[in-house]
Amino acid sequence: MEKDKIFVILSDWNAWNKPLPPTFSRPLYEQEIARKAKSGEVIVIKGVRRSGKSTLLTNEIKRLQAGGMPAKNILFVNLEDQRFSLFEPLTLLEKIKETWLEYVQPQGDTVIMLDEVQNIPQWEKWVLKEYEIGSSKLYVTGSNSQLLGVEFGTALTGRYLDVEVYPLGFKEFLLFHAVEIHSRADFIQQQLKVKQLFRRYVAFGGFPKIALTDDELLAKETLKVYFDSILLRDIVSRHKLNNFAVLQELSLFLLSNNATLNAYNKLKNTFNVSFERIREYVEFLQGAYLIFTLNKFDYSYKKQVVNPKKFYAVDTGLSNNVSFSVSAKIAQNLENIVFLELKRRHENAFYYKTANNLEVDFLVERDDCYELIQVCATLQDSATRQRELRVFAVAAAELHKPIKPLILTLDESETVVQDGLSIDIRHVLEWLCL
Image (tube, rainbow, N blue to C red):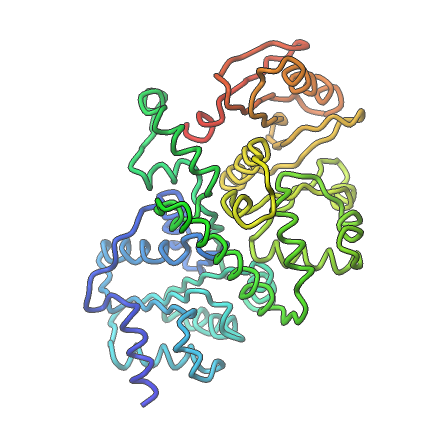
């Protein structure tokens, strides 16, 4: 019987008669999910494959159960389970719900969680129906922002709140290794351990499973599997691409050259394809969260869009281990880590170029100022130090707000005065941890 088979699959994934698996906590995401869940809107958890979205749903189940909700009142559906492919996709979600109601018989308030929902065609219509009848609170996760955006834009506008999930930030990475930093005293006392873990974090990144893998060869092999899965399942399969050699070459090139400025025209010449094809492929890579782009700051939005963009990898582990970069790139990796941390902090960031072509790595918009951030491995070389310091005065003369200068480096923290500006030079680990 069809429902019997569906119930077997659901039983494997749900904790109706067994304990939930042990998981690591990610407090900032969990607090955001809990806060937004109070709204009653559909909660959308999106981000790159293997970034921990399913675990966040498990942790939300634990929170709901701790608040008194019976286990049987929560339905978790892993739509990556290949056994679901045996059923008619257009009616699958309704059959899953019917099976749960008939076999488990939840009573009272209920919750439905759909993991990797983009695997089901027209899922958004079913979610809209469930939202409108209000029978259950709804959570969905997905690994493709383009598909989620299009589908929600047509069906669920104004009915959902999203949570964007990234691989572990460094402070989360420390928690996975039982290192907690709450104060400067904590940082100083555990500085040696923190620096050791940071070297590993830079080299292998922050995917949760990788963070817990001590075997470096296994970590490298797993990262390559992640890359292939993202490329093939979240781009090639989703967009029905037949010839994806250029897409693969482009993705490897951009991962190899993270934290680097590139124009679409330059890329189309490099790969000998049309401008439209390059733009489309970059959008696919962004949609799968494999890469991010950063616009140049300009008071004209049109100029922001047409200027060359800086490209960043979703994770330095991917950038280091699946690309064809053959040399250490500590400065680029540091800048990439800072970029991702700004994303996690929901900062509105750009890069900036002065009239005489000096570059500021990040311009962050504040209400009363622009925070200008330079990222540099070391300022020990006097020429490098002067170059990094002098850009702030030039930028300050061009911008229409006061500036707050910051240099993030692996050197010791200090404050210097240059051209009348007080410049904060901070160890990047302090900035990440405190």
